Image (cartoon, rainbow, N blue to C red; front, side, top):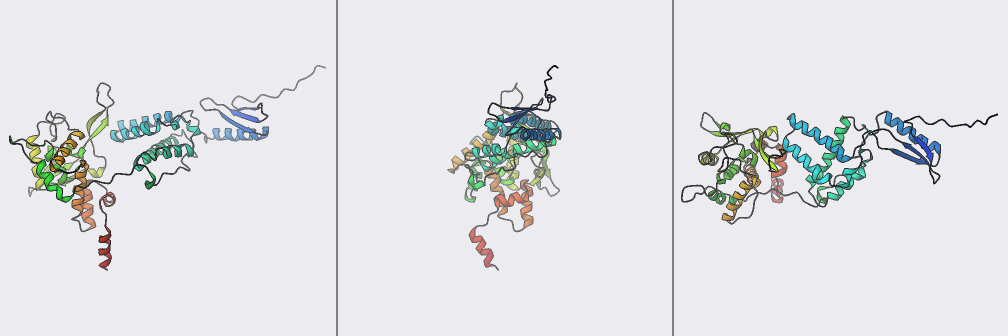
Length: 398
């Protein structure tokens, strides 16, 4: 009678492989096209088979990441989605540029970028945040956190990741006091400097030309609280006069620096006119006597704008001034006055604090917020501080 050799049935394709390795441990290995391989080990065959069967069930029920992509590769997909939002005008180009920059500067160079998304753990993300903590501000660290969090939320929406996927489960943001670079305090120009700055900024040469081309523009900011991009976008069409000859300016646009994506242009960044960052920034600002004077000087002095003929602030060649042009003018004026350095945004902060020092009610503060195009709570947090003496005075009134 012929010997019959009993053969074990082979596991079907896609069922995985179970074997004993040279060290005597049982190994279960699962390979599926488009997915990274998965391996389990155990002391017994039944133990690794149970692990393998559980994993296969999770795969079939959509609870396992099926994409064999690194974080860097998936971030590319996420950024493409964000770029399409720019095309659909649901996201500003400047916002996209900031998002892309956070990835390129802080995430892409880090080893986490090469981690497979299926292997991404809370410890990987925490390690990245901990590594940049001594070198950057809280704001930057938070942006890194939000990029990764938004990317994973997008992946869940796209069903690239299961709903249970949460590599942020134990991730903690550092306290603001623990970061290496402290957030800059806002700059306020002291009251005693302001008149001197205005006088120099609006001065003339013996030949009747302005001593500082953008001097009137800087004084205009001191009287209106405009952001620099808003200043560059003020237009003749935005000038409003009422029946009592009072004048206002309508702020409905801003000039933004966006990353140049046209390879035919050598500049890294280009200036474009965009809607304001926030809907509340679309506002009407009344002009006081000094602001009207500055506006008249700008209208009389600045020539034809090459970008759009109704725009007001321009260089001698009719283009947008750069941030550097404006800042250099302020630096020259401050040196002439013998004063320390201030950034141009200090002019807006100074306008805000001078107005708020004259407020006496919540309605007044709300009006200041509207003039600034800022949220009421932001204005309270940024500008209103009560000193110890002021607190004592309040209590003593009881």
